[in-house]
Length: 317
Image (cartoon, rainbow, N blue to C red; front, side, top):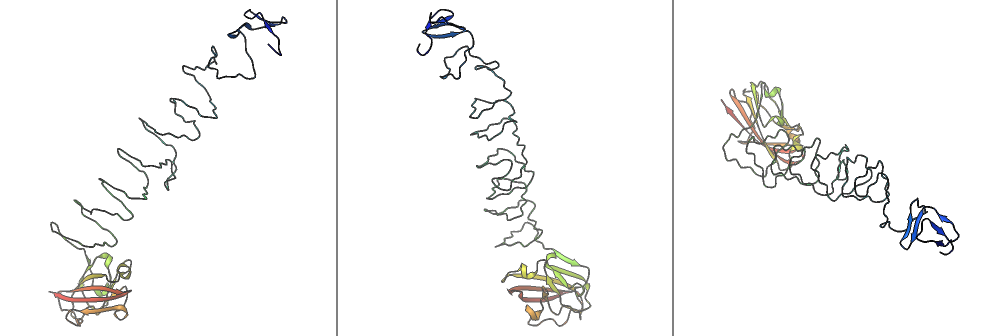
């Protein structure tokens, strides 16, 4: 050995330096290495330690099961599997595949207002083999395709690309205006329309609201001339576009000297925007003495708040 004591009596126990110093704890020194029965202390060791034997840490097994209260790792921890609830794991975990044979619960309660918010964010598609229950609302940015559903409750427009078929129950529209490009009725059931029946006379109930129907029947005999006013909740001028037409039927209990002398729409007088043409060429100058007078008025919107009415009156006695 250089720059140090020269060992002598290699292979002896204990090992002895050339100056007679005894190295305690080293039982033999030979070509195969040091055999130490005590503690070997150094500021560092070199090598991967693969050839070390008899090295053990209390409570740590390299082949069996070890239990640790805490592991602090600044790098990557790799294992074939992890056991436990994982409730104390922190940080961000990325998995290529997650398979759960039981229930997967996400305890976060954050609501979702977009594709990047919420308790669970999925950047790809989601395939669900069975039922789905949603406790709050559903917002869809694209198209919803149904194979079979029981009820659809929509606050917007529902579009049926291949038509709409009601096999039972029919179609019930409770408000608004229904627009059809065409309609075909092939029988099989009753085609009916609501009649708004008023236990009074037209001259005392001058406002005819189309929200209550397009046919209005007044059962009390008239006793005065009148100018009825046809309206709707939104306004006829709002409900009708230029070029639209609507038909109003008004039935009154006849009286010879009591009848409508003109008609208003949204309060607009004849002189201000309602032009009326009567069947037969002239407006009626009197009511009929008995029975029911049946007024039919077809209104065509020709401009903003401007209408042309084609009117007819018939008596049924």
